[in-house]
Image 1 (cartoon, helix red, strand yellow):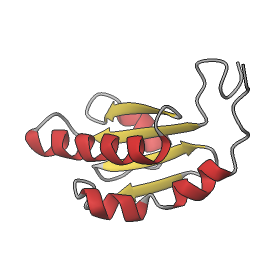
Image 2: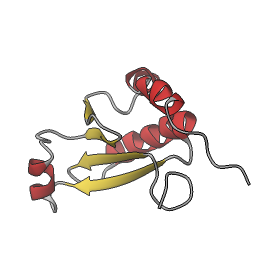
Image 3: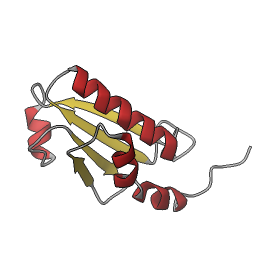
Image 4: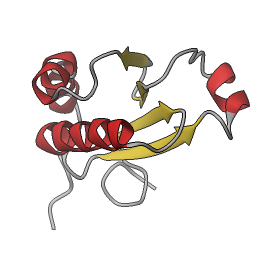
Length: 109
């Protein structure tokens, strides 16, 4: 399916964590807030618990958590550190504005 006509969305992210905690929940909320502000409806977000999917994390080159990785479109970009700070995350994900502007327009009905 195409960018706007099917389930494949132009942006794909993975959030790597080592479990569920209040801190992890705060980070996930911040990530969702900023992604919704910048690319609402245009992204998929997959959660990877590296305790259960260690091989996926190793294959993806993730060696610390929490990590947010933009998988699609290339190139892959990884963020880690102060992911729970919404303002900091907005600055770190500012590149999404430019990438969104490069997308083809959605089809008209």
